Amino acid sequence: MFRTRAGLVVAGTRSWLPLVVAAALGGLGCETSTGLDSDREHLIQTESLEYEFQPDWIGLRVEIPYVFTNRTGRQVYLVNCNGAFALHLEREDNGSWRAAWAPVIEDCLSPPIVIPRNTTFVDTLRVWGAPPGSNAGPQFDVEDPSGLYRIVWDDALSSFQDDSYPFGPQIPLDARISNRFTIRR
Image (cartoon, rainbow, N blue to C red):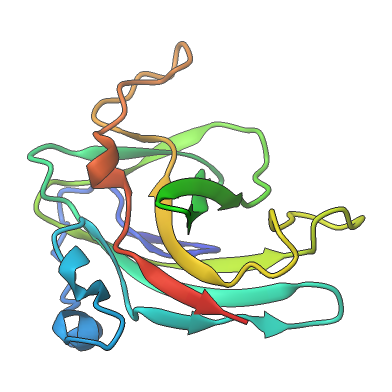
């Protein structure tokens, strides 16, 4: 195991012990007034179903703790650069999902983050975004980004080979998306 700037990461080591996250995420199974608890089957689960943007001097920020439980039946490989891996937030817009925010990540290739099957990966997505059209980035796609969201992993692979891009086949989209959750301003 090693830590990245984003949180606890699983490395493919012989001494891997599964993380116990039930206590930390005890509220996931609870019914809420939003009706979003029906998303419990997703492999990526956020700690809460509701978050609030916090304004700063130019943009908005929010931290979203989440857990990925690898029930894919095989190892999952996250393509990364010094521990930062590609993901983005999608917001629901009239019944369809639309890319709303993505982090800026350096362009390098580190050894993949390996998540063994039947284990968990615990992380926190730290979102900061500037208004669209500003001279700062990353930017949100709209002025008021409040809405219904999901996390999407971009380069989560079922095998990894570093000699050519793409580095391997993606795991299915339904294994790379989180439950739905709201973020309000």
